[in-house]
Length: 265
Length: 275
Image 1 (cartoon, each protein chain N blue to C red):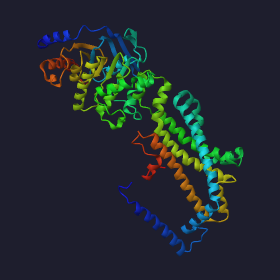
Image 2 (image 1 turned 135 degrees about the vertical axis):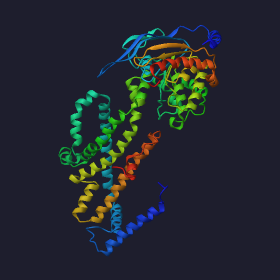
Image 3 (image 1 turned 180 degrees about the vertical axis):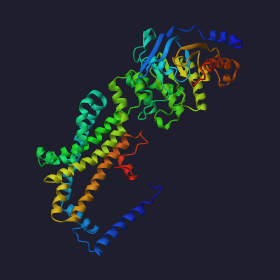
Image 4 (image 1 turned 90 degrees about the vertical axis):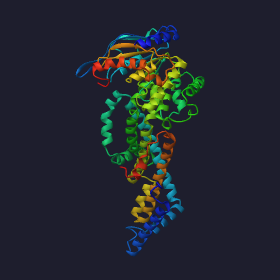
């Protein structure tokens, strides 16, 4: 990173940008319910946090996200493994998977709410649904990516299929699985917020809705800030785990690290 | 071949009567069915390998050498005929065979010592029991101090040495090597040939070594099996009577040249080694 840049210059640029924004809003007298000045956003962030209203609701959203992530990715790993290992299973389950994958999962939010109520479960279910596919697809591709020579080596040692799975296929799949987990984590957060928009009693999505109703655009901006920090931290957790688990995979770059270099996501 | 006859006698005396056959291959045939009909990969393959013998199999690309090795390793079934290891037919993978492939085929998530101990893990032989053996073998190939390193930290030659140690760790009855040095540069390849000779002189394993380098085949082997292009048959078995240890300089000797010439003559007849 530092090869072509200067960290302090980067921060200065950011501050300058905030300064220009602040100046423009004040000079052009842009109404606060349209685009708030940075100072107003930070003030909203401060009061919201001080009254614990942000903290409590952020905690709710975080819980929904993490539970949805764990549920969705566990199921995705199990189903992906079954599909990768059994062509027969794949043959019978493929039509449902393909159809369900093509469906925009957020469209299910109203139904999920009807089935699981306005409480925590509906949020977890939607987060899990959205987090599910990126990991399932990557698990399948990863488990099938095991090198043919390495499989032959294991066979020549008289290894059982179970041993080939644990000693070869699973480690070979880890780069794919970790990339899938990174995407799944961010997707789970999206699922939780969408479900909150549709109907909930607490959470940052609910807060955005009610602030929007009250015309408090500075408040909305302050929550968007919290959400992006939350997303960043959740992503960092996965990145740290990936670095530990994939120490041997020097070439592997995380999905989000690639976006910094102009990736696709 | 006159020049070599006296040496042949000397070498024969040095190598006491070869032991019983470790490998017996009888009327082996392999036919692949493809959309365009049958492809005869191997036909009428017949040979024996004695205990402690080093056999090279040399032949042009596509002559079925690798198919033969896969059959011996139990990775492919033969279409007819059979291969016996210590008297029992090879019908599937066996625990008393060590295989070295063209590429090192190391697991990047395992350190050098853990790669070497892979057969111990798979065959539940006890890591602790084989740990000393592993360290001894790594010392033998000049890799002491590299146990905790990972494959990507090693050069190609070092990686292939790790693969050889891994193939030896469970003390197999036979070592199968499929062009193990084919991917290395010429200098490293010569060093690895010396290294392999040294290991073989120390361990006296039965080795079947596949290559398409004639000098390599002659340098390493007691006998060279010359194979024809598809369908692969054994054209000639050449006994190499150059005494060991053979030095790289020996490759420049007239008798070495005579062996190489005799083998190459087969391939000129077929239109070259890479035909």
